[in-house]
Structures are given as structure tokens and as C-alpha cells.
Length: 243
Image (tube, rainbow, N blue to C red; front, side):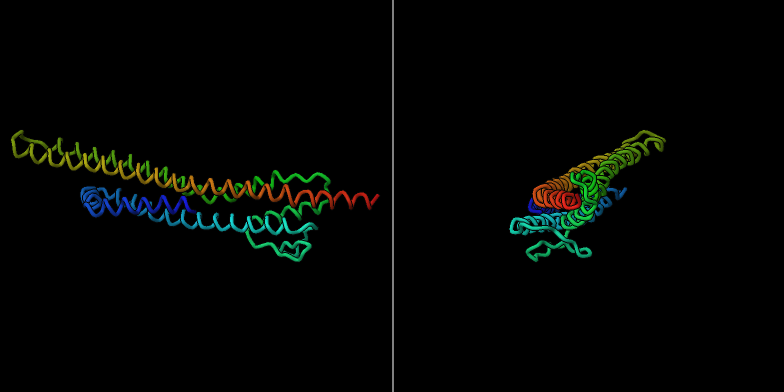
């Protein structure tokens, strides 16, 4: 969350400077295709989505740390009561994606297998968390393509007046060159806005994705150290009593 806040703070500061010196208004006024405006709105909306995801993952990391602390203070078995996971010291694990994974793992451990493999559960856990970021990477690619679309539209605006030239004189050439420069500005501005928006958005979701990987790693460590050995020992003890 901190990296996302730092990046967003820098972006807001630079955007404020650009607006103060009139660069933003120049781009918006010159771009008759309104693609730059659309990319800007799309960037703001997707940044809000990224903020929500960043806060969610950061909160889940904090919950995972508290879950690990609860396990370190307990040395007994694990029980589930509905959707609740409880330890033998009476502690109830906080609600979160880590607790949900532990709940599923305990249910799987009730099958009595001596060797508990959580590979598939961890894969599903990781895919579920990573799937939240896919929309961000998709939109960042879309911004780059919108910038390229603006380039094509700009060249159309630039070359269009050439077909309407009837006579070559100073006044007509001045009008044509003015229109061509406007089309070139559209092509360059939309490409620039698309590149900047796409790169910054991908960077935001890159930070979120790294946090997701940290959460998956922490969840794996908690379950492999505290949960899986307890479930395997419980299954082994049950089989010994049965014999």
C-alpha cells in the first residue's frame, strides 16, 4: 500500500504542475478526437480500482501476520465451527482470505490422509487473488492501443485537407498547413497520453501483484509450519488408534 501511495502522490504532484502551467488544457483543447480525455478518465477510474485492491491486499497481509502470531501462541489442534477456525487456546482466527484457506485445508485434512498436499488449494488461492488484478493489466494495454488509435486518427486529420486543395496559393497552403499541424498534434498527444497512462497503470498493478505474492508466500509459510504438521499428526494418531 505504501508503494502505491508514493507513486500516486508523485503522479498527482506532476499532474498538478502540468495543469498549473497549462499543459493539460493544451492537450485537451488540441485533441479534437477526445481520446486523450477518455484515456484520462479511464486512468482515474482504474486507479480507484487499484486503490481498493491495494487496500484489500494490505489488510489481508496484516490479518495474516496476526494469524501467524495466534498460531505461535498455540500448541494444540485446530477445529472449525461453520466458517470459524478456532485454536485449542480458545483463540478465534480473524476473518480473511488466509483463514478461509486454513478452513479449506482443515476440511481436506479431515479425510485422514497421512500426507497432506495443499498444492491445488494454494494454486486456487493464488489464482483467486491474482484474478483481481487482471482487469488493471487489461486496461493498461487498452490505453496503449487507444494511444495508437489516436495516432491513426491524427494522421487522418493531417492528410485529409490535401485532397481538397484546388489551387496552390499562399492562403490555401496556410490553411492546409494549419489543419495538418492540428492533426499532427492529435497524433502525438494521444500517443503520449496513452503511453504515460498505460505505463503508470501497469506500474501500480505491478506493486499490487508483488503484495499478492507476499500474501501467498506468507500463507504458505503459516500453513506448512503450523497447520499441515498438526493435521498430519492428528491423522497418524487416528490411524494408530484404529489399528
